[in-house]
Image (cartoon, rainbow, N blue to C red; front, side):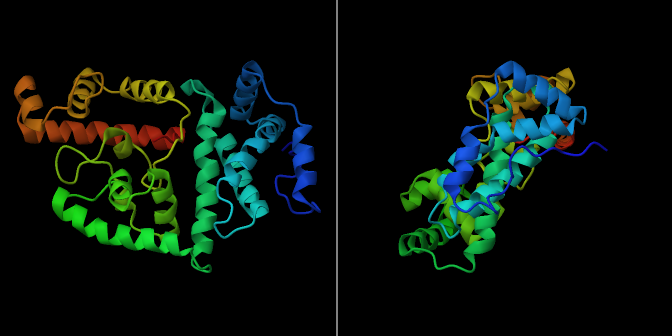
Length: 286
């Protein structure tokens, strides 16, 4: 197998200072859209030199992401190292045929790698008092909201109850290792979740994994196109996709001349198909 040629170290170890690392990054040329697309295709074909070029050209973006997590327990150099590993994972998994930019996909893997490292480290550090307060309040509100809503509270609902931005609440919940059920968006009935969450990997964190709403809509439409007309129509009505509003199982059942239980079966089967496709493609989105 052809050896992977490293233009620049993917870790900051060995650098006397981060400034030297940043200077090396500044000398790497950025990619045009055409160059990025060509490299992504070559990576998909197994070209390791193309993957090295793709990763190297996006290393400075990792620095931008890592800086957002400074003063949370790990040195910036460690955050960058973890983010670079996430970037490499993204380069290996990215599917250029889906129609959105590489960095829109890679941001999830970068942030996930950083947040997981922070989560591992959080048990060994003393959190600031304001974070302790917010986490304590979140624990209290979690039970209150679950009783009121008869389902697990979303991050947004917890953030509103505690009085902090949703992004800040996400980070603090991960540091505290609270249950992933907190990340479940609300549905029509107790125990239901939004379609995008249902077909996504349960380990995803709800954040800006795709750069724009148009990217996300394109992705959802592409996934839905793999279903039969009946399956697609049922999911669109249940989850308000290309429809003015969501419909209940009873309403959809009446329109299709089927029972609500049959509609649930068809929907569950369709969602299972989408989840399989998502895992095969390595798709990550909000």
